[in-house]
Image (cartoon, rainbow, N blue to C red; front, side):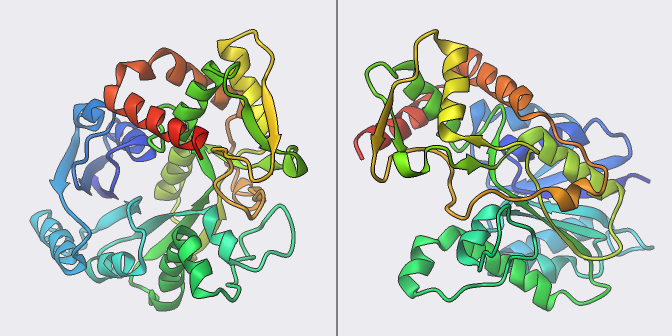
Length: 338
């Protein structure tokens, strides 16, 4: 009997790539739940051998009921049948993780929570690169919690798992991702940066002179997918947390230069300003360490190889997607007018 896999979210980018990959494994029966939002001409619907269920997480009780309904439909809990793994891309609040836990405890072998390095922006950081154990909260004013709401709320999700998941209910792995690059990136930031550099002669890239050589952590979408597949295959004996990123880092100027070299032979036009308007990094904490996850033998794509694949997509293919083009242009205009 095929092993059951459930993806929460997954309509675009990493989730779509994961569904595409898992759909080709005959050992798995893959289901996914999301709101059905349309990204990249709804290309997720073109994936075969996966099963879609509409679901909205705004009402957490309804979402718990939905997962229980799907589980019952698939005979989960009968004769030892269970979810082999549940991968959660779309939980941003602890109540959403709690609702999944209520539905899955005792009927799921592994829960993979996709988190972020933004959690380190609300933690006490003692050394760079940041290791996974530097996740103790620092005291924040309410205004700071609001400003760092994404990292604050993602950390609350992690804290729920660490404090309330009881032994025997399911094993979990938390993956903390920095800024992600790759084809079909739905954040619009890389696409907007490419558009900015296409008109770099008129609109110089803005850089804070004081931090112009500051290094940035990134990760390639395909590497995230490979990490997820690794943990599905090798479910850990203990709950684990891992940073997931390239071995290499890069500065914003270096990134812009790499992109510009692919689209033009002109020299990079830079404007040094205070509090520059830029797309990367999305965090203030600094670069993260991937030493722990590399101890598992997992290898990461070279940064320049991943950048080339990402740039090629946004230069050669992304213009075919009207909605994403419009969104990236609007994002760029907001930066230019900031």
